[in-house]
Image (cartoon, rainbow over all chains, first blue to last red; front, side, top):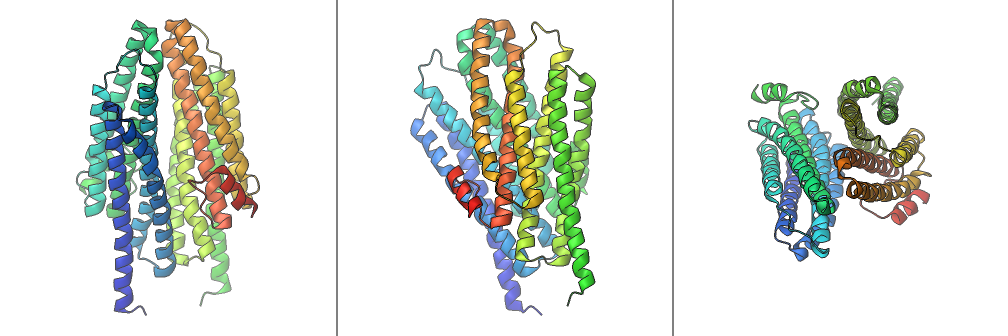
Length: 234
Length: 234
């Protein structure tokens, strides 16, 4: 028999892991914002800071993984808690990869501002995409924090928008390159930044889907937005 | 007390999940080979087949996830087995994403061969990169099948090679685009294919790292190749 004391300790352990996941989420959000600010404001020190802070996010991923395994081994969680733990393990993988993409943007920012530029690129669309992805991540993490799926479908819908935006940016850059081939190298850098942001959107959507599974017990990965909506509103 | 019968059943369950992971790995390898064949041989039906089969891989991911959660809930696995189960959960996420990248290549192959082409691109470097990534995945899955880490470091080393190859392909395509701007659209498609292959390499490396953790209990993610080698040879 487990005592009341043991139960309280178990709850505290689970709560501590949830807090760590949210802390990691907050750090990743900050990394995205800083990476894009570094890019827009030609802020090389800020870009370097993003690259350096990636280690802290990686370390947090390893720590959460270990904490999850320890709780499972010691506490024999109930089906619901176990589902949450398994989904936290998946969530942090996606968070870590969003962090990687932010680092990539920071590295490209550095590369752009260290090289001799023939022109100053316009980043309006990139900025808009990035703000959208930040909002998606915030909604997904908020859903995880409250275990409330009511807004998760928005994340899936916004992801489709971000994919469209990526295609629009690509088309625009192609036109740009055709008009002036000297812009090819720079345009490709911007395209890889757009690609990184589009990936971040995919990861945010994954996290939203894990929350639906945690709360509803229904796996909505690899389904349509409509099916996800049906589950979320059930 | 658990009876001998229960233990045997548990072993069989764990073995069944391991077999499913390997089955998924085999399917993903086949998807890579078919996607690149579709591209090289202008084989549109084969490209369509790759796109269609992605669903089966997605379904297998969901099934393995559920099987892992069920085993944990019912069997209270030992520390070693639990570590393996947690790493299988991670492994299938990477396998599923390699499958996604293969699908992307197949879609680009279709797009290339459905459009009016101004020139036939050379795919030698792409093919070489792809063969390398296939080999990386095979070594990683083989290490998982045998729980033998002796060749996992090769995967990490080859991943660095694939990253270099990606950069070389990008440089080559830039030269190409500068020489003849009419090749820009096509060159970008090829660049996205190279990017997809580079990603597959990252995922294969992740899987190799999980195997090191399964076998050695040491987390070698986010470390250097040297540290990984030290652990693998320990």
